[in-house]
Image (tube, rainbow, N blue to C red; front, side):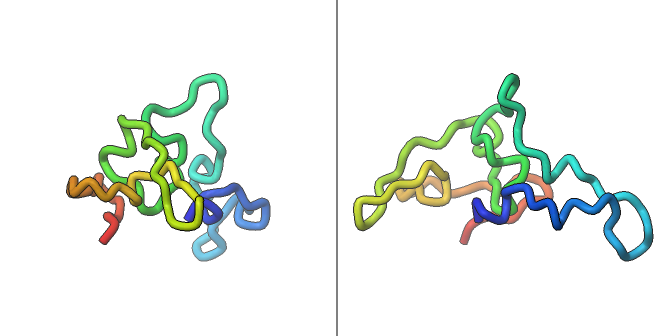
Length: 91
């Protein structure tokens, strides 16, 4: 998921190739380091971003094998994820 959010120079072509119209290139831009977005820094580009991703920075969630993730998708506290408009929710 994070890799799919990374900028890809081959994906950024200036148009979508179907109808000749310009594609929205801002979705492929990394967040500003000077003025980062509120909440999770990946939420503007993440296809699974939830409403809480927009305003709350995720804590570090410990995973198996000594790994960890700072993503609300790994929250096991029982809080139901809420999808934002036009965003998919984790199942």
